Every structure is written in structure tokens, then in C-alpha cells.
Image (cartoon, rainbow, N blue to C red):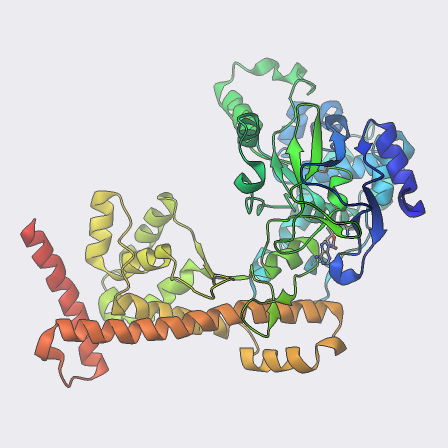
Length: 528
Ligand SMILES: C[S@@+](CC[C@H](N)C(=O)[O-])C[C@H]1O[C@@H](n2cnc3c(N)ncnc32)[C@H](O)[C@@H]1O
């Protein structure tokens, strides 16, 4: 028997052909640390059991809402509502404004109206996140720009669709942020290629694991619904080739959608026990392992690092870390921007980079065109605490540092080998030291506060502290490892250059390193 609070939502869901095994699951209130409202197993559920199923018609997207059709497909595109989330947000605002006229009215009634995501934090709380990757990615300014430049003009342009009396209350920036955060914390990404995988009998649970890290919760990846129902009158000008190509591209691109009931499941690092599977007419939430009566039914949000959980969902994972007496998120990472490598290469090796400065932009453009990243992600294996300097970090550093590597990369069309030589490691060490300076506090100070005062903090400050600590622990682990590797590389390189380097200072040894690199290249060329 469902709990009384959820009854209206369940009744709506079932009356629209949704299936819920109400003997097997209910929706109840868990403690906040376990996600608050979530689904519970009412009895032992075996693996492979369908706990609930959502008909395609209940999925809310820019394809299933009738707004884009009524607005006109060309006008929708002209207003750039087909790009990013603004179109879906506008559909959600419009459906919500429609009240009981909307098919999804009971769904909207069931959705949270406030969030702990940094999008809604004040400046004082946001300052606690300084240095973390949350700050760069918050996107508040962009959201406000989209609202002002795309959404509001679209709303004002069609009084027949958007009741002018509703505009000051239902089409506000505040509502825009509310719907945007509902998307970031509850949406799913439907991928076309996943449809093929599913139809070819792939092992879904293994195949898709960890793949759901894109925007929104993207709690599972699946196939988009068919496009047949879309308003097609304005496809008439398909003779226009460019536009036609653009249409195809859009049809192939992942679609962000809202899936009622599927989005009521909470998630915690590696606790997933159900997964959403594609069927032609519906989406089925199926157990991926046996679930005991009384246990929470957990989905996955992709085992995201805390910075991403906080940014998109407003919560963090704070769990025992294997092999330590500490707590945190085993999936934490730290992001380092490529421009920090450029800055440090210039500082650490002015001798090597002085001639390169003029062409650094060319090297960086080449790297990006070849598909290289402009942000590097550092992580530590949660089970073994082992870490590896990501090969792209080494390749990129060598590309900007070494003239010969750049020339070789250009002629071969391949980035430099990810060699851990002393010059490259010295740059990486400087990058890590600079990365730490981005935070206002030290790890030591944060760890002390974490151990002694955590419970006196407001929720936002507590979350910010845990995000900071998680990132800094990774930077420190890399610092330790890089210092060790650098010493080792210097020793080996000194030994290899023979008695020449005996008794010389660090500066001289670096000069020798640089000389040796040139010699190495010359001899290789010679051999070839
Ligand atoms: C997809 S919804 C899950 C259902 C949600 N609890 C509800 O009441 O509708 C995602 C939201 O649930 C909460 N949540 C999910 N997992 C959590 C966890 N492990 N710890 C704390 N909060 C969690 C967060 O507020 C997040 O934004």
C-alpha cells in the first residue's frame, strides 16, 4: 500500500498506463544523508525484477510537450530554443503554467521546489568554494543570459501561447532557475546509439556503467523516442542542404528528458541496485541485484565526484574511504586547466620556452584541434590509492615545452609521447603547487575543521568544505608522487649523462637535461 503523500502521484502515474509493483516498492522519507524522499523495497526483490515501467508518452521532453509544435519548429530554432536546456526549461514552465490542463500537472506537484545547489547560494557561501571546479562551471551568468535573450523574448512574442498575466509570476528568472535545477538534478540523457546496443543484447548494467556523467543526472542512457509526432510542416524547406544536415545532427544528438517516477530514486557511490532499460514503448526500472526488504532502491548518477554532485544535485557523498580512517567520496577528482601548464612551463623553463612563446597559441590550437582537452582530470584509484599522471598531461606539457616535440607532433600528426622526464615533471610539480594556491585554505586547516567543527557548519559550508578537502587530498597525493618521480628522473638522467653532471648544482643539471634532450633527438634522427 503506497504512503498517503505519494498516493496522488501514483494514481496519476497509473492512470496514464504507468506500471508500479506496489507490493515490491513504496516511496518513503529517508534521512537527508540518504537522499530524503526515495524508494524502498517492501519485500525481497530478486535480480531482474521490473519494479516500475514508464510509458514513453509520460516522458517529458521537447518532443512530447506540444509547445515546440505550437510555437512552430522554425520559430523555435530561430529563437535558438533547440540548443542547450532552454527549450526544455521553457516547455516545463509552460506545462507547469498550464496547471491541470497539462498532462504532467501531478508530476509537477510532486517535484521539489527548493534546492541546495550552489546556483542558489549567497556570495558568502559561494566564497567557500573558491578554487574548486564548481566555481568555473556554475553557469549562472549563462543561464541568466539565456533567459533574457532567448526565453523571455520568445514568451513575449506569443501572447496566444503565453498568457500575459502569467508572465510576472510563471515566466520569471526564478522559475527558470527552478526548472533548470530540476533538470540538472533529475533529468536523463537518451542516446541514440544506446538503442542499438540495447537491441543487440549488450550487457546493459556493465556496458553503461559510469557513462552517465554528462549534464543533468543522466541517470541512464537510452534511445530517443521516435520523431514522427513532431510538427513537420516547417520541414518543407528541406531543400536547403545546410539546414537539412543540421536537422540530422540534432536528431542524432543525445536528448535530455524528464522521466516521472524514475527520478524519485536516490543514488550513492557504487550502491546502484536498479537500472533503467529501454523498451520500444516504455522504460523499465529493473533490479540489477537482489534487494532485501527495507533496503533503499538506488539508481546511479554516474558515481560523480562531489564537486559535480553538489553543482548538479545539491548533495555530496561522504562515505568511509577504503584503507583509511577518513571519509569522503571515492569518486572525487580534481580538474586542472591547461592554461596553468602553459603558465608554469614559461616560469619553470624560461630557457626552453623563450623562443616558443610566439607560437604557443599555434601549439595549443593544434592540441585542441586534435581532440586534446583544455582541462585535465586527476584521480586516485579508490581501491588501491594508486595514481598515474594522465598521459595527456605529459604529452601536452612536452608539446608546449619542447621545440623538437612540437615539430615532430606537427609532422607526424600525433601528440608527443607521454614521457616522465625531469623537465616535464618539474612543470607538473609547479602546476600542482599553483593549483593548491587557488584555494584560500590549506588542506591541513580544512582537515582540522572537518574533524572538529563539521557539525557546527551550515549545510552549504559543510558541503563546500567536503568538496575542497576531496580535491586537495588528490592534489597532495599527486604532489607526493610527482616529487618522488622527479627525484628519480633526475637521478637517472644524471647517471645517464655520466660523470659530466657529477657534483653539479640543480641549475646546471637542468641545463644538462636540456642539452641531453637535444642530443637524444639528434642521435635518434641520425639512427633513422
Ligand atoms: C533524482 S532526485 C531523487 C529524489 C529526491 N530525493 C526527491 O525527493 O524527489 C535527486 C535529488 O535527491 C537528493 N539525493 C539523491 N541522492 C542523495 C544522497 N545520496 N544524499 C543526499 N541527497 C541525495 C538530492 O537532493 C538530489 O538533488
